Image (cartoon, rainbow, N blue to C red; front, side, top):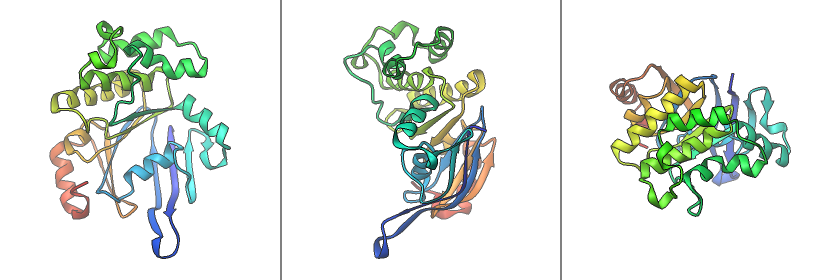
Length: 243
């Protein structure tokens, strides 16, 4: 098991400003599986990802990565866990403009003072399909290429799990399809675990399963999704139709 939420609750504010962002969520993110999380704004999908990634503290319940309970960790331990076991991919590519693609990919390892597993890194770079662009800086790459560099960076340290927050939100449809195909291949060919927040039924169709959130609760789950099946399922829960 790559990660697990058990009765996970997240509350913001107190009194009249109190908001329950997650209301007793329980789910598992299995090793070697691609999961999409869908729901409207305010449904809790990004909060769930942030809590599971150790970016936000839980109010109650349990968030675990592997055998590690995140709430039991001190700040330094949590930082180390995120560095060693978690990869992140966001809408904004977050590449350093002065570094080459190759340097951006290995940056987390360099910061941690770890040597790259050359065989793994070669496999990641081959999967990402940018071997002829490694010496290029971000400004010399297309949006899709920049996002592939960002995904390769997330994979470089062989994390236990990758969290992707709307990774195709800033891309055109073709570039978005390239990134989604790459994420799917990283699961199928590299054995990676990927959890992706999205509002796009087409993006969700690349996943092995989709979980739907509304009002801080999981309201449905769909395996082997197609875009049409995701849309049909969303119609059963009107509040989840738009993000």
